[in-house]
Length: 388
Image (tube, rainbow, N blue to C red; front, side):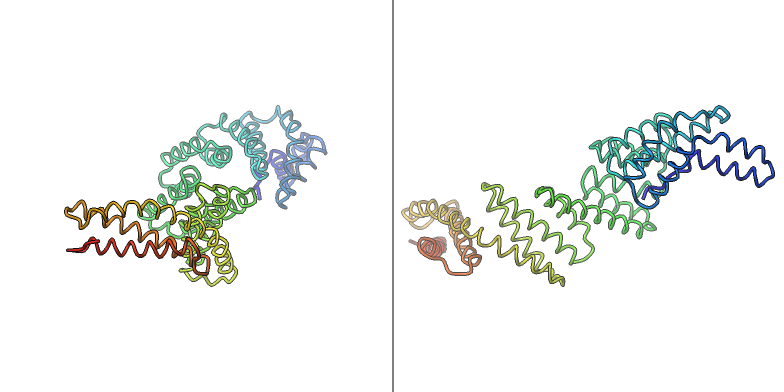
């Protein structure tokens, strides 16, 4: 919830009340007489109450409607410095409400106006950084964060915030590296750093949910890797791997050229997650579901690749067999490489059978038998004294 700064209206109320308590009724009346219309006073209080109750939209609506009248107040009896501070506080409140409503561009506009009046204000510089990141001005945000570090090198909050800025601009790994470095320099920050890592995890989790709704599977995969980095338990790590596997499965569906590679990577992550033995039954069900969905799709890809490889390597084998026993180191290397190629074909086809849950049939079964036979013949040929 936005924490609204004290407005000029409230200050006048307090001053009038203090004057009344001190017995200066005339001063109290003078101060109260300078209050503006009842509409502005009531509207201001309603906006503050709405903000404190968490109704950001209502507070923002009221605050925006009141702003022109507020800025037009006749405050001739107030010092210029006090008037400037009051107007600045009002504008900051408006910026905070806009940010709470995710209207970052509008919030940034008000914050920049405030900074033009107070360019060296540390608190203002800190407030503007999230807005800059939100509108895509990450490099500017990083520059300001580095400036803050130079101005306040021992300020713990600024040190911790810099890690979050690095994570937003240069990636989660950059933020985590900063925290690792900070922990070495400042062992007393251990608990604060753990909390920031949790904050980072929560932010990544929330953003992952948004990307899933938007169908941004590449972004979902990237955030899954980031969540793996910040995971504090095997369960959390398994959940991050499951997110990556889900994203890779979806990417495989959208890109036929990368289908096999995506499915293989997805299944590898499922296997890694299951190795962690997560206790969450729903997570285990999701992992098995992904495995059952991807496996049958990968099997045909492996069979096709195995058959294509066998065609080419069979021809290479014919040329080598005609040459007889290898005479040089180069000859032996060619035979060994060809043996490895046949063994890869055997691996592809055997895994395809495993993923299908049943033995290969027809051409695929014949190819598997032939690849095994040729791998054995290569091994025989490469052996000392071997021949075809």
